[in-house]
Image (cartoon, rainbow, N blue to C red; front, side, top):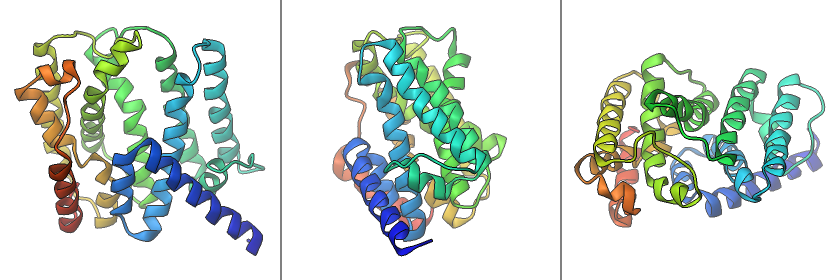
Length: 262
């Protein structure tokens, strides 16, 4: 790689860090707690996620939103093919990180984001869990891959739990946008989902993982306390107050990073 190409990649990684810092501050803090080599990879991956997640929301025209998502789907296809890849501040460094299989895996994340375009309800809780598996779950599986690790069925269930915790914090905003984020909007249903997620998370955390892989999963640092809060105070999900105090949240991230937990 030439000096010019190296400089371009470095500038792109810096741009990715800025995207994540502004668009996903929780994952930005988690990435910054990772070792430098992994940190840069995670920042590129999370920048990709920010860009894909916002694509359906920048316009009210469904066709334009579809085209924006298709652009990312095609970019991942180019990476998977191993040939020329479009130059872009996120796609260019992403192409340096992903294997063909990882790129194809992230295409499912892009496809799942089409849910954000239309006001279709989930048929049942199984459909919601499948959506979480295809979105945040896919993102975290890719993060594991960047750390040189692979997932397992039990770990996948834990990643769904992490996804649900974040999803519950977004419920009021999604409802305000005429979306239907929960198959059943009731405190009882929220308690049931959060309880199931806590059980999934506990099982997943008992799975052996290398230290670096655990650092790749730090993006789920708030999941357990958020899910516990949803169990005891489910009304917080509906009124938009499902969140941790900033100091408590930051202290938890520091503790997990120091103890190599996630």
